[in-house]
Length: 425
Image (tube, rainbow, N blue to C red):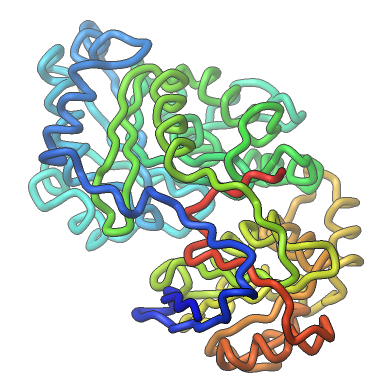
């Protein structure tokens, strides 16, 4: 018998399975890594040895208006470590520079004053100039048309600055391949209409708009074009382990530094698909499994390795409910995944609705394979999304075996669906 401990909420669920039923175990190495020394020193070294660009202190010379794009409260970027060093490096070359920290909310809610204090520390929060991006503001600068056809409008401070810098973190991303780098601009500080167009059904329908893929990925290509158009000159990005510790820091030109961070992740996160009739996956526990909306990310790993006609079992406690109301409403109005997917794909890019993209990915998965959802959610709510509810992993396994009419079906286990990049054979 094999025993697995699968993250669920604040704890773990024990899963016992006969050895002969195990098809494979897909595990990322990234969360086993530890920082190579002091985390601040790792960031400092990256800033002092930039890739594809001069040091930030050199780039800052002679510049008057400098903007630093910073991720918002929804991203675990260790700004308390990165931001002080970015500011120091800029002022090392230009003590008189006027610096604005632009919080990249995308289409999220505004970051609160308390969240700013917690994220940056009181000294920076009280001393520096902050601007919280508003995607519906009138102060936008038009930078042209994206490769996908939509117009790119960005925050006015960003569009008019003399030097644009960004901090962020890199992780596998379900449609952009990887987060970080160019995504600070689009969707980070872009207009509402630009973000909606960027998330259109036609872009996400590409088979290259998947986790770990950058080549020919239209989501990546749009973001890349946007970062170039905005003249993003320098980034500092990090890779984090399960404890949100920095295990890799990169800095320099946004293409070169981001590529180095992605290479690091690929080295530690790529696993070969092991097709099986049943795939058990999770969203890595709380806070990532706090709602159903977020749990779609973990399902994509299972999607890449489940056999045709197989079943996915998703463990996500979902203590905060289903997440986005718009996401819920789409399934409430049409919970037949195939029909919903067709409707989304027929929606013109300029008419893209908020959170349509997450609905599209879930509908794509469900149109191919049943998903049994283990959570705290009411059964009726799970069924609205076209999934099969279960209260325990044991119940989910029994339902999967019944659907397959095979009590000995092979199982692939993915303890953390967000942390792996599943390479299809």
